[in-house]
Length: 247
Ligand code: BTN
Image (cartoon, rainbow, N blue to C red; front, side):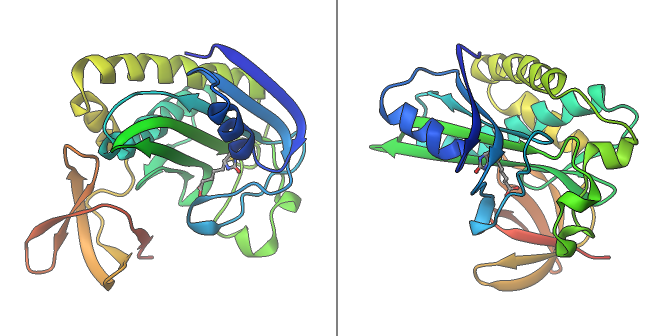
């Protein structure tokens, strides 16, 4: 899937560089990697800790030409690909996916995915898939307030990992799944996601635009929304939410 790689020493955000390239007409499979980001960003306006040389910060361009509402499925596909790659490379760590696309070890985040899409007349013009992985970060790299909720592969494994192996492993998985997805649709991806999920079947506090509620995630629907069972027994789809596991 990767056609061209652009490597940088330091950027504000690889998302910004990839987006600029996409606007200039860069092809699907253009990959931007940086050693360091000065304004790495996460979902919901958060920052992404991006110290030099120890994490993976990358963004790549997809041009799937599908209707806009398929974007959530691509996010989930990316999470599955990354989870499978990391489980193979960082065995025996038990890495799971928290809805929609965080990767966790023992409840602490090691990776985040940010898909930003641009559409025209309800069709995806391009998608920038951004991936941050805390590979060889040490506890000193994280701000104090994140230490309870974030970790790195090196901290968990007790040894550093080769970042190039992880990048290669991810794209191998991504390419396989993307091919399956384009041929057979979201069904197979959905099954893989559900099997790797740490979110399912645990009563969870959900923070929705309409307020806070307790519900139990039970699966994904065909669009990639999370299906949750509310206390009255009804099952409803959640499209974008923050969820905070109890505990
Ligand atoms: C999240 O968990 O909120 C998503 C984090 C995404 C971070 C990556 S690092 C590479 C790319 N560039 C950015 O500025 N963000 C994404």
